Amino acid sequence: MSNSSSITQFLLLAFSDTRELQLLHFWLFLGTYLAALLGNGLIITTIACDQHLHTPMYFFLLNLSLLDLGFISTTVPNSMANSLWDIRAISYFGCATQIFLLSFLIATEYSLLTIMSYDRYVAICKPLHYGTLLGSRACVHMAAAAWATGFLSALLHTANTFSLPLCKGNALDQFFCEIPQILKLSCSDAYLRELGLIAVSACLIFLCFEFIILSYIQIFMAVLRIPSEQGRHKAFSTCVPHLAVVSLFASTSFFAYLKPPSLSSQSMDLVMAVLYSVLPPVVNPLIYSMRNKEIRHSLRKVFQHLLFQHH
Image (cartoon, rainbow, N blue to C red; front, side, top):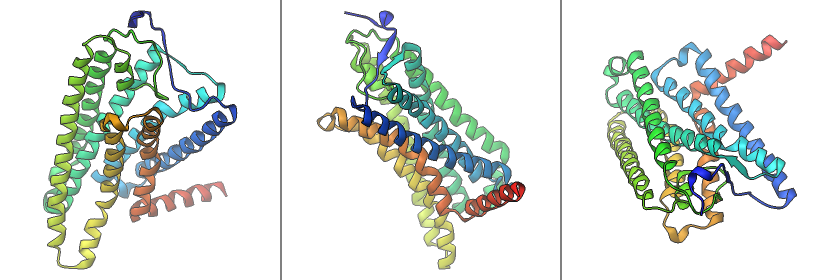
């Protein structure tokens, strides 16, 4: 029997024991990570540099890209290093840090996506009040509230999870540290406390989604009332990227955490974890840049400026 005080490290799940597959995993993750860095980095740079993009919608998008960079950087580099050097261990502190950062980034991203739906609601349903309801101070306060919510949520979850006595070894069935995996190692009924906290968080996330869905019902009703087809298309096209990002993030993380136990297997859990921790940060910049003319136009200007300076 061992308890959490005697555990100094955890053993993460290796993708493979075969050296060739370990190296393949390293190169695949490296390519994915570089794509996420490039995509989100370009969006952050473009929004920061282009005066025309200093609007509430792009301010929140810049925050989203920062979150996505943090999200993929919390799990992928460590996993790449483990594959490259064929190691599985992560220190107790390293594991706690990963859980804190993941909880923080997930909660903040949900809060931010909810705020972004409010931004689209005001832009389409109350366009005359857009400047007053979403002034620069209001936007900063909303973004700060999203980050603070994530921070408090992460603090509660991490403190709660790591106060549990752990007596079922130190091997985790995942390539990074996550709360459900730590709970599996707990040997007391104290884990029910953390399950309660997860249930409260799930309720809050559900409320966020209810808010997003209600916002979009109002938006669709307002769009359908626009007389010209061009106007309807323009109004709706500003919502499509946000809807796509919400759908991707919600479907992957919901399925990863809320799937029935009958569907749970080591390989299935691994695939779902890759989908929800790696896919959104890579795909989000593509969704926004492909569907948004202003972003594409600004990106072009940034590239032209860089090329011009180079020559």
